[in-house]
Length: 295
Image (cartoon, rainbow, N blue to C red; front, side, top):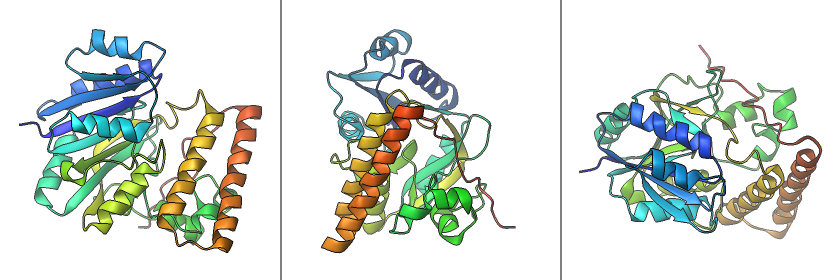
């Protein structure tokens, strides 16, 4: 019996991937698990590194990059764990808290998805547990100008959950796909999302089907934000906003006026990010708004 299937989708992240895999060897002792790496047509020797240094890891080497969601579903099809963990190659486990997460699943039969505590390299907590996006999110997201100038406004606090205590287990709307654990019976991500937004969509579908989504800080995971996409900031901007538009088209109420305004906001933001990438490269900060829970 395998309790946990860890799935890592990698594209040109050789050194980050090696550190990620090493952390699994160190911190999943005592957990019956398997690891499957899907290499999406890397050209940096990632697949060869996995074969040579981690022979116990199952490797699926794709000749072309078909996207994150397709890769996750391919790995789900060839693994057998009761629970599935999506883990970014730019993340690594910091402790043995996965056992506590699996015990939490076993004790709460209607919880379908759990996310751990994600932290930056300096130990600060990332904003990995949030409310579902709304129209207000366009103006009060993590990197918006309004959030930067007015970080404690109620709309930003609601969306980013900055008033919540990051040290306690809690129900939430969605958790980051940088490290997301779910019951196998929930299936996998929607393959129409090449990359980005698939985690929000997955949690929304899980909650619509009656499953709970929880944040569990017993498991701590170091996540280098953008570690797998910093080398291609322009392409990242395009892929991100294409996924944002697909999420909007799938889940938001449609009418011509709202569609037009939303399209202008989404693709206008995309053009700004592309221009910044061309002029300055990828300058994303780890997190704009720190957790500031109320007493």
